[in-house]
Length: 260
Image 1: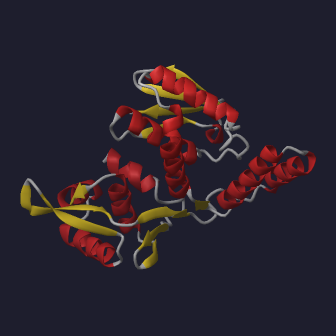
Image 2: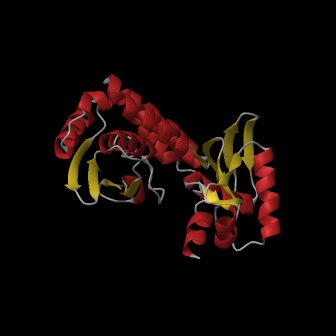
Image 3: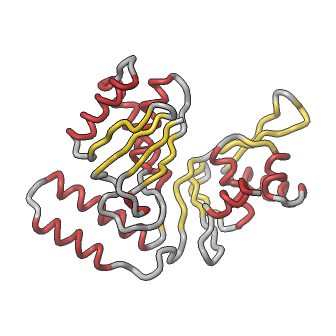
């Protein structure tokens, strides 16, 4: 049941409240049902069969059927017939995952962090640093209200990565990473370096995205992850998965991305 626990933990706060937001052809859809949230956390990651959903959640087939039908009617998911077994259905995401809302997840508001950022804006004359502070104030305010927009940031990062790849591309992975490190530095995103090739692991220091965020106990570099996902998916000619294993926002000394 570890797989089930991982997904349920990612969709609820300590009060057991699940609020996920999706953009569909019918407009925004807000999901608060714990069971639907768990189902969606599975489908967001990959296409999955009805039987797998039942097995992972531990719910009855009738219960899962009702929830899946509701989610299809809302335009959030859809299904197709399993090519290997016509009797089975495979469910997939038919919408865009916008983010999640977790009321008061971080407890009391940390006004000092906003005051710190505001002070830096007043004292800085550098346009880049001014924008950086504005970005972080925005992120801090969202975090303190329990609003997580990582899916949107990740998709933005993917678009950026797809756009810049032609400037960075090289047949050799180490040379591509060198080009990427120059791009990172020149654009004030911080400093990145190769940790190891297998699995491909990259460290990031002085991270623009999370370096000034309060420690929230989880990774916060969805934009960077999206950029790396796009760049290395194109470079390796396959879909890669980027997992942030260390992050300043978790209290680590640097951010670390594993690319598989």
